[in-house]
Image (tube, rainbow, N blue to C red; front, top):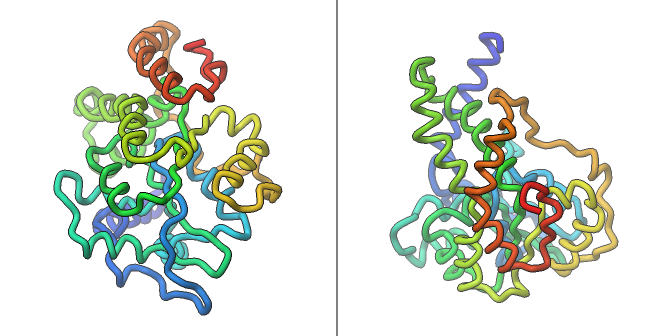
Length: 295
């Protein structure tokens, strides 16, 4: 990466640290003005997980539907050269209750013209403490979408993301890389690959028919069937076919970490096995064959 690219990259991330959705909870002034004929509406859907499971690609397919529109913060970010499907709102108030004003502010982020729907997709909600209870208190009628991925592959992808981005941002010294990998990267990545605790919490707050759980691997191989299922779940025309869906590549990054060796994968199979079994028991419609490590 040349000097100019490094400077631009760092400036972009420094903005992320001070601006919504990552740097702070958004405020009303961070939202785009309502287009003519649009009305503020409750969020029809909230995607709650998981990171590194093709959620940006899937959200792009979803909002290509003529009856699904972006949330108001994302529209503003795109207008200013940014990009995010995630509001991350509930991450900023993890261990405390929410004031009614905070709930009202969140609900202002969603607007649509007559006959259309709007939502968001924040991938850390599933595993982050209290997020699901905050969501349920704020909007109990929303439909919930979760995309899961083979936890071993997801863990490596998450680790790679943290090293490429957070490690570079924090300027982790060469002699501190092992410390960073051991005490921050691996633990965070593994946490977000254990799905059953979050799914059990989700089932405490939402009916099963309000929840759609998809598999990243099946989305890739059968995207037309799975996006049709998604549209039907959301109550929009399921026959709409997004253009170029199978070939759309979003957030693809080269790996700076080596792939897991065979023995490492086997050890991770044992680590994740009970969680995978419980996940499949909670949602028996999921097909374990898409995760051959556990089949």
